[in-house]
Length: 150
Image 1: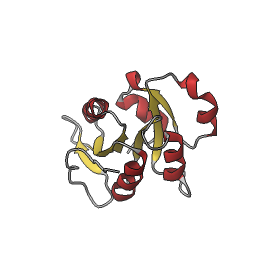
Image 2: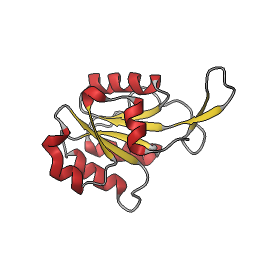
Image 3: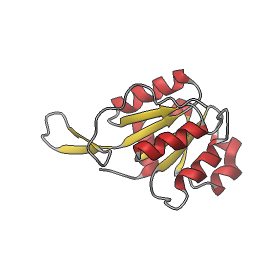
Image 4: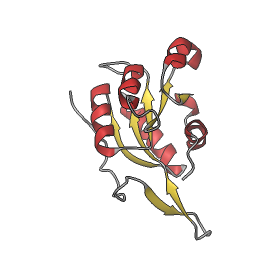
């Protein structure tokens, strides 16, 4: 399996949380860090642009479940945006692995081009913080699910 983390991750402080200053406010806010996991490069690129525009720091990307586990272990993101359908293993299994023994971090948000109703049973049994349809991905949607405000 190939591991692809996308463009090089931006340098971040040792806890992988990047500081940024709000325009004109002089206040420093901590940006949530995220890893995007999806087998479609086009979606990863679109999600990256959207989330970075909304103040997230994208630490890396992965195109399959095995790469996702590796990237998340190395980069320790606050949030993982995780596609349900991956080429090697489904997102629910990856979510269970990522949250095993530490259900608070990372906060896993599942996504799919199919509606949440397609996964009702699996979502209820999952340790994911929630689900956002691909067409509805925004920083605000992720923040509402992870309930973390740094």
